[in-house]
Amino acid sequence: MKIIGFVLFVLLIASCGESSKKKQELKSVHPYINYFYPYDSVPRIYCYRNIANGLDEEFHRIYGIKDSKGHHIVVEKYASTGRIIEAFNYNYDSLNVIDHMVVNRNNLKTQAVLVKTKLFPFSDTEQTWFASKYAGHLDSTLILDELKRKVQKKNVDYLVMDEEKRKAIYFSDFRRLTMINIFSKKETSLNTEGFSIFAEGFGLVEFYSKNKIAHYKLEKVLTQKEWKEFLHR
Image 1: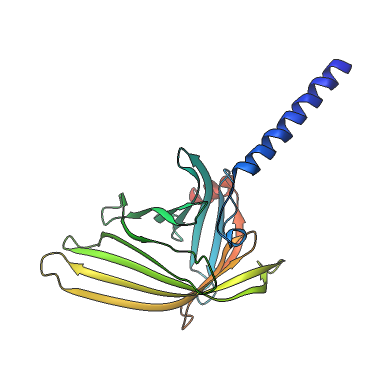
Image 2 (image 1 turned 60 degrees about the vertical axis):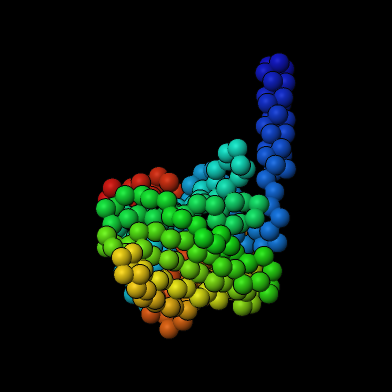
């Protein structure tokens, strides 16, 4: 029994050492990293409900990965039907976008061309600029998707899912979608303004347009098992 107890003790110490080592390896230079999605290799699915239209939902599947280039956080976006729309791969150290995937007109996953990669401000005064290009829903069109973001206010008390009180940062967002006809070179743009709220220990908890026609709020967090059950309901 003493031998078994000693072995278990050694395994526990080794496990704690490995966990501590992982925490030391996981570093970010971004000052607002605590307001971004937590790094976890086990996927979590955020369910956002449009409080302007209670039947409308959006799901974000979030998980961490590690490769030769370091740690990353992947955010996959799904429609209320469970159909994937797009995905972003963030570098954990800088929180810059290193990959943007969109679903094209043929319902196939395609890699967008990144033009600008900053989506999460590094300071109170910085305005980030993210831009990517991908094929439109018509054969003759190309979409330039741009988002400019700036800190509006920070260190604000926020009640996450009406349960947990956390500090939050409010961002003002300006988005422009430009549809380009690849033959005539004619451009048509649509501009929208909105706001995004990121809470400490959670990441994105609320986002809405300026006129609040669309107003999504984090309602619950699902496990991978619960997500699979939802998809097969």
